[in-house]
Amino acid sequence: MAVRNVIKIGNQTLRKKSKEVVSFDEELGTLLDDMKKTMIEKNGLGISAVQVGVLRRAIVIDLEDGEYLEIINPEIIKTKGSKVADEGCLSVPGFYCEVKRPKYVMIKAQDRNGETYTFEAEDMTARCICHEIDHLNGILFVDHTKQGQEYRSQVEKNFKAE
Ligand code: CO
Image (cartoon, rainbow, N blue to C red; front, side):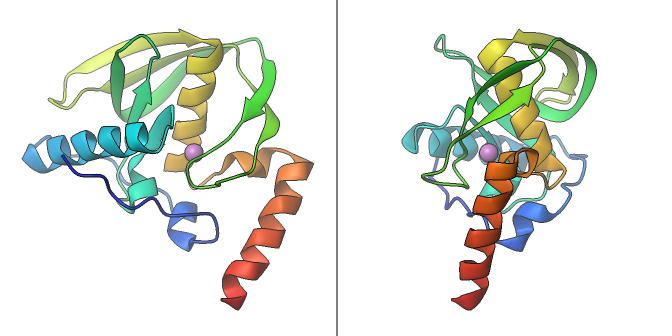
């Protein structure tokens, strides 16, 4: 397992839509192992493949009970309620803002062997799953609020100037 470089806001790869995973092979296993290691090393609660520069629909989530969930090709089946809470992102270091997310989410996804499963989550884990699925569609949490959009335009301006 290796810690990979996490790309940051301003990098246009983060704005691309990730492609479906079709090969459930050794390379996917290595990617997921590396994502998990990278997330733990950088104190994240979730990570998507695009954040390590791989445009595939793969996510790892820290379930905060010593377990990790690998989410491949996710689909949101159901959401309920909403909750506002502080959010951050490994690709947006040093910035946090409140974001409204569903309180409950049910997803359908595949594991690293291609087996389909459904998973239900609430509160922080539901938030985390929605945040990571956004990444697969080129969306960052800062896009959801005015404060975040202001921060984004600042950063993107500076990024281009470099
Ligand atoms: Co993120």
